[in-house]
Amino acid sequence: MEPSEKNKILFTQLVVMLHSAGMQQMGKLKNPVTGQINRDLGQAQLSIDMLDMISEKMRGNLSSEEERLLKSLLQELKLNYVDEVNKDQQKPTQEQAQPAGSQ
Image 1 (tube, rainbow, N blue to C red):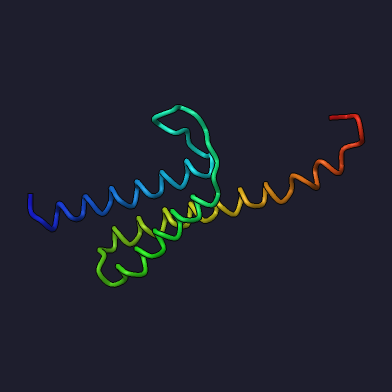
Image 2 (image 1 turned 90 degrees about the vertical axis):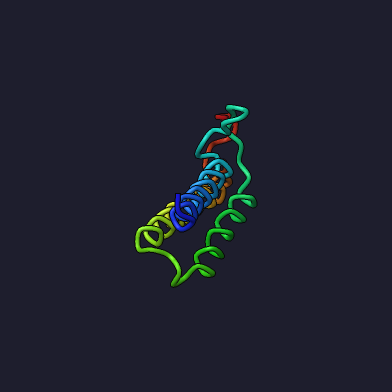
């Protein structure tokens, strides 16, 4: 295997790994080791920031296929992150809307 082909595969694996980590950290995927769902939005934000940094640093050095993959996975992570943050912000409102004793 040529070094450029190997690097393409490794880049794809890295991006997919960070995407999967972010999805797990948002509680969207089970942890493959424990089989449990854990949620840590701070860590999810870190995974998103790492992919953003990779995107910035690699600008102009990616094939169109790699660029599409990175952009697509980043967009999916960011949309899911916003969804999770919005869920957290709505929780107190939903609890306040319930009459006392109906919980």
